[in-house]
Image (tube, rainbow, N blue to C red; front, side, top):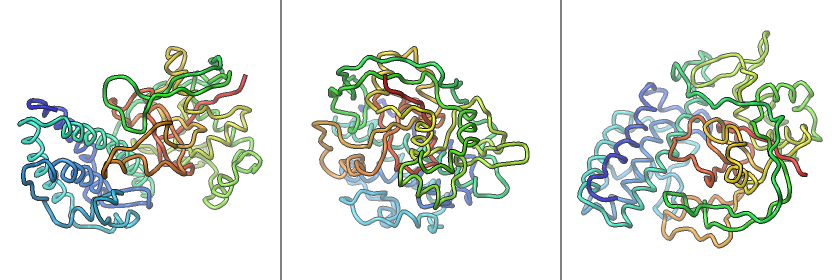
Amino acid sequence: MTGGTAGPYAAVRAATESIAAPLSAEDQTVQSMPDVSPTKWHRAHTTWFFETFVLAPHGGGYVPHHPGYGYLFNSYYELVGARYPRPARGLITRPGVAEVAEYRRVVDEAMLSLVETGTSPEVATLIELGLHHEQQHQELMLMDILHVLSVNPLRPVYCDVEPAATAATTPARWVEVEGGPTEIGHAADGFAFDNEGPRHTEWIEPHAIAAGLVTNDDWLAFIGDGGYERPELWLSDGWATVMAQGWTAPLYWTATDDGWSEFTLSGESAVDGSAPVAHVSHYEADAFARWSGGRLPTEAEWEHVITVHPDAIESAFGSVWQWTSSPYVAYPRYAPPSGAVGEYNAKFMSNQMVLRGSSVATPDDHTRATYRNFFPPAARWVFGGLRLAKDL
């Protein structure tokens, strides 16, 4: 990133503020569960990232804005220093939203000055990573505020119109795929996270993948057939979670006298049967696949079909993330970057499952076939759905 390229930085930072704009100070402070972070924390943490990894080592004598912010807004970078406990982020009433806005202003001013004077390739790479990191948090902000608003009995609306999802179809049409070796992983020009490579060869068996996503109508049939009451459909940990949490439907669904309603960013509405099911965990996706007589695709199968048969697959991007059967582990020959930024992805390569595609809340820059999203198998507040696969 050289002089005169401040536009992308300013655009990404402005997008974060646009997401926060409809929210009150109280909205931005609440943490409704340990996995949710307050909106103002996201705004501050993404700022801390630039301050810590770009300005402090490369900013020509830059002094951190506040000596305590490094402790409050470090997420999980152990090599950088101590961190405030994640489950307690909602207890921090100060700094308030105005102070966080000032923090962002100060850091933006220093960053724009640095960018406009020109940077080395090393610093340019860090800035690019920071921008994609902030875009990830933009989706997290929408995921988190949906959960925050969902626990309010008033069922408040975040925005009047939720981003339109790509039209979904039933998974009745199948795309058959020959078996054999296939290459997956990022190799093209342009940005990719370190966990998307190296590009390598994997073997896939003959199989078929559903052209469309699983819909709400499909899920209603699963519920109607006792899907949440049949332990034979579930992985052991999944069934234990169903019992412990009392799951009977996707997150944000509520049974009413007239059927099912769903809470979304645009408020409460009747469940749209033709829309792709969302906010289901990997455990639920796996149980549904078993009930349907199919299975979840591996991430290699998903990436292969999207790359080789892109016109045959519907709603690959922009609707819901799609759970796969693949655990989140390192690709062959993977080596994390050196230093604290190496903690970005590598340290999470255990006890997580991979999702592919993108959702209605995903920034366009993050739409690519090699993108590897990952969450614990019980996570439901993600914009997560599924498409089916079956063996041939």
